[in-house]
Image (tube, rainbow, N blue to C red; front, side, top):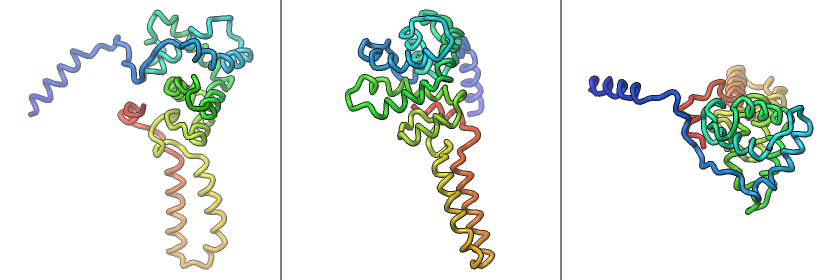
Length: 215
C-alpha cells in the first residue's frame, strides 16, 4: 500500500505542469449584447471616477470574468484577452470605486429573466476577489443580500458582522440581570457568549480544499 501511494505521488509530480492555466470553475462565454447593455451603465459610471486611460470596457470585462471563472492568478489570463497586468490594474481601479457593491445590489434587485441574472456566477466570483481590497464591505453586503456565492467560502466560516452586533447587544442587555445569578451560571453564560462572538467573527484561514468546493 505504501509503495502504491509513493508511486501515485511521483506520478502526480511528473504530470503536474505549473505553466498550465487554472481550470474553469464555472462556464465562461463572452458577454452578449444584452448582458453588456445591462452591465455597462454601472461600469461606465465607475470608470468616470477613476484615472485610467480610455479602453474597450467590454473587452476588459470579458477578461475579468475569464479570470473570475477560475481560482488562478491574474497572470494566467489567456493572451487573447490582453495583458494580465493591465486587466488587473483596471479591476483594482473600478473596485476602489465601489463597482462590485453596486453590481451586487443591482443583481439582487433584478427581476427574474433580467440579463444581469445570467452574470450571477461571474459577478459573485469577481466580487470575491474584490474582498482583498474592500474587506468587510462586500462580505456584509453579500450576507444581507443573501448572495452566498459572493462570500469567500462557506457562510459558516465567514464573518457575520450583523449577528456579531446582535450577540454583543444581547450580552450587554443581560449584564444587569447576571448580578443576581449564581457565580458559576454567570461565568458559563459569559463563556458561551464569548464563544459565539468568536464563531461569528469567522475563520482567519479557510482551507483551500473548502474554497475549491465553493462554486
